[in-house]
Length: 177
Length: 102
Image 1: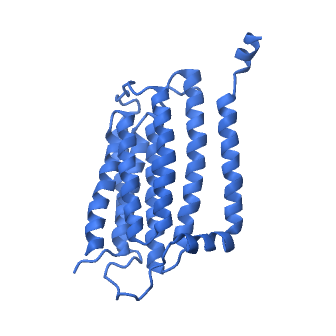
Image 2: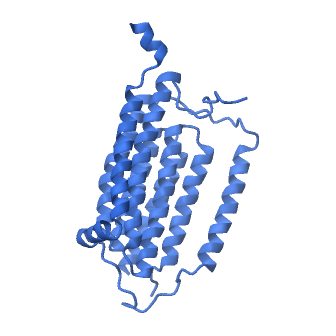
Image 3: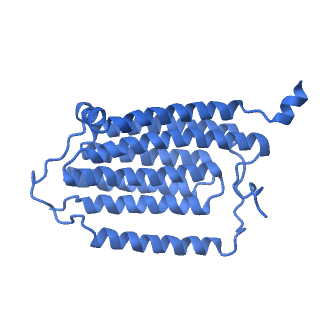
């Protein structure tokens, strides 16, 4: 019963945040909508006993990624009005049609797929408890290669971002000499 | 009594993914498009957690970890590219970045 209440509340606020991201004119409001979505999803993760994932979601997504987004929004300027005219003919209708097709496909998959809709007997499958110890054990034994590749990927991303930030146009550089 | 089954989580994830997809298709601000991509990634994360719970294994949560790391790396590089483009062209609208148009 508690799970149902949390699912309805947090699911609604996740979707409301998503709608805000898509529809808000001001990018800062989009970022705030994304924050609502991310935090609500973290609560849903806690209900599913994914404790570490929920904590990382809040720290990495709501903390680091969203702050980075806000930095760039402020840097680029928030007061630029977005052009809402349709440059591609029938753009919105095309998007709506495509969204309907995808929604129909998702509905078929969700209804006819192998997801259970009837409640199973309690304790039929024990819910995996995603504590730091359990998840760390998995990450550093079974998935250790993936974890190490991830470290390489993060290093490359950091180096690439710094290289992009310090990159100067050759023409400008020669003009300064 | 009504109980939340994996089907409900999949429905929520599908709705969130659809929202993100619509946003990528209709918005022109590169930053907002990026946020919509993040929404789609989060929808997929939710399916991983729900499916892992239904199967009773931890692998779903491990997958979420890798998705999170790749998303973080993608955001860092993507935002750096957007800032670099903005410095050069003074715009973040994808409509005005049509230099490759024939």
